[in-house]
Image 1 (spheres, rainbow, N blue to C red):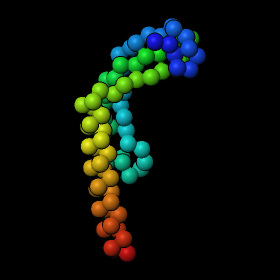
Image 2: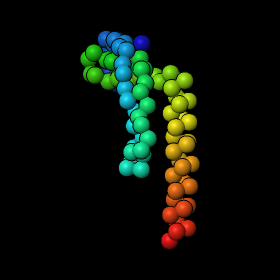
Image 3: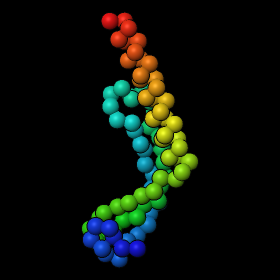
Length: 82
């Protein structure tokens, strides 16, 4: 497969370790999610692409949903207290 950026055929696949943190100060109480995606790197321009395994993707969806729900509840309580 050719690089999507420079069309070079010089690509290599690597195993990686990545920690995904939900952004924003409000997410500091939630630990990051450690994932191990396979990453393809263009050896000419450095462009990368990776695919997150489905099980990990579901975990990210679930964690993001639970955070959103909890934040909505806290926001509601804050408004009610005002």
